[in-house]
Image (tube, rainbow, N blue to C red; front, side):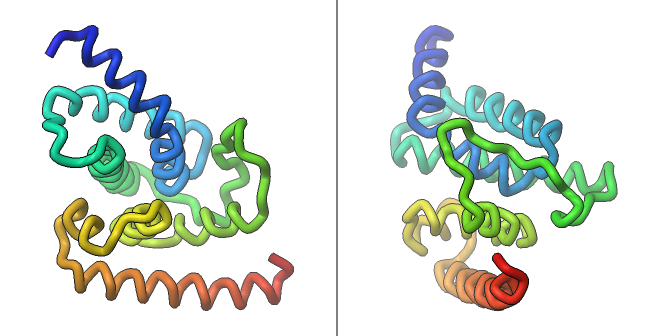
Length: 169
């Protein structure tokens, strides 16, 4: 593949699927500096993966696979290097210019941030309309495991939404 072709494909993918990049970054990194670092890491890995893309899946599925793997690896490495702050201590979050502020969305991202990396991945894929079968294939787990994890994620969200209502969210 020529560098010019790779550059064109990357530009198209970034323009069409930037929401995927931002959702994953926002779900795995919590400070502006970390979000910038993770966005750059994901972008580099997506760029490097373009020659391996065979078109067997939609570009968005491929991007999710690369980005989630990169984010999970990044999160593991960060956890080893630094003591992470609880989400309640983090004041800054990545805001996309095109997106208006919504307290419910902020609450959802805060809840997703509390999940284990695999559960974050499942949650993001589910919110983007991927089927259990597609999620299982992307993450290399069984379809029934996806179902169990989604059930637990929903329980977590329900439990915390009751707490949030009590505290004015």
